[in-house]
Amino acid sequence: MALTSCRLLSIRLFRDWPVYSLLLAFGQIISANSYQIVLLTGESGQASKKLYVVAGVYIATSMFWWFMVRRFKAVYALSLPWLLYGLAFLLLGIASFIDDYVDRGMTQDVATGFYAAAASSGAIIFSLNFGDESGAPTKLWAIRALIITAFAQLYSAALWFWGSLMSNPFHPRGSASGNIGSSSVPKGIVIGIPIAILLWAIGIVLFLGLPDYYRQSPETIPGYYVSLFRRKIVPWFFVMVILQNYWLSAPYGRSWEFLFSSKHVPGWAIFLLAVLFFVVLWSGLLVVFTVYSNSHPWLLPIFATGLGLGVPRWAQELWGTSGIGLYLPWAGGPVASAIISRCLWLWLGLLDTVQIVGLGMMLIATLTRQHVMGVLIGSQIVGSVATMVARATSPNASHATVTFPDFTEGAMPGLGNKWFWICLAFQLVIPFGFFKFFRKEQVTKP
Image (tube, rainbow, N blue to C red; front, side):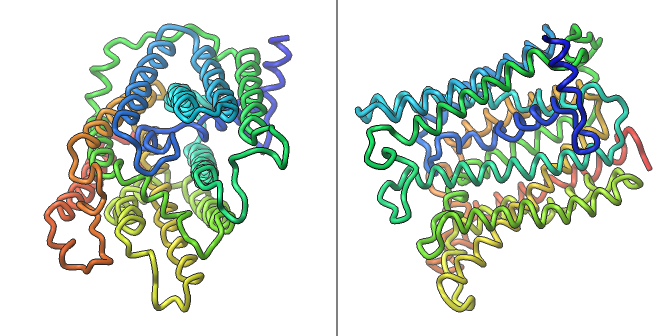
């Protein structure tokens, strides 16, 4: 049975994607990085204690997955997270049956912990996907990374849309909460249980059918950590993670809340806008980078580093939290204003996603697969710590208006705040290190 499953999962679809790689890519899509753990409960202002617990679980399980993949066959670290994903959705379904508010909240918190534990395997999945290929051209890696990241952004938008419905049961267009029609069956159980079964099935299929590459004993790399930090791009990558998580993680949920906050445009229409940006426009970018990455493997990393000078993530959060995008008087009306404002937010998110992919490609171009995995696991741990420290000490821990001023009150009070400029300066310094180190350390120089 295992041999048959292995053969089935090795069938290639869409020209060069084995079936197992599609399943692992789905694991990448539904995972969350250290920057996104503030979104896992679907709250824009997550309680500090809850954030510390979720981040602590994320850190501990990141270490656990690293230990597993360095001590045991990779098949275990790639299949076990699906059990945890399934448990998370199972508990979410069960929570819909619980009438007591406190008990229901505790059940949902446990589900969030399971999801965080599973999501911390994202770095392992990214590093080990397409493992039975050796020497795949940069063009293929660029295409794959762009496709997977686009779907990951759509998944985040879908989750936030669902969360907005769950938190508003009196919405005139209906809600994802409550019961099905006049029955006593909660919607949550109908949604959660089938998803849990599907996720468990994926884990079983991967465990039985992953190729032989994933069933080998882990290789021993002498001086692994020494060789890792000899690459100057590695500590700079950690610097980037610290600066972004410290200054930008706290307002991240409030920025996402802005996307579905309009009273003039329904949530489904905003989600269709997200599809437009992350499917249609993203496909155009995919074609461009596909054409040029074959002969210029450095193009995507350098383009992404250049985007850093425009600080797309900082600009996106500024637009979503400062009140600038709440109403555009020149747009011609409230509906047009809401649509144009969300389009700009999504465009900045698109640029930020390109930057994420480019930096990932930069690691692939300068490090081996095993070293990339170590860097990404390390960044999950370091980033989560920075997120926790930010919640406790950063100027925008409770109110984004400290570093992202509320411009509805006027421009000068906010622009006169030193923290606004300090936050911006720390984001602008990030790309210069990548410009400096990437060309020197690129494995395949043009």
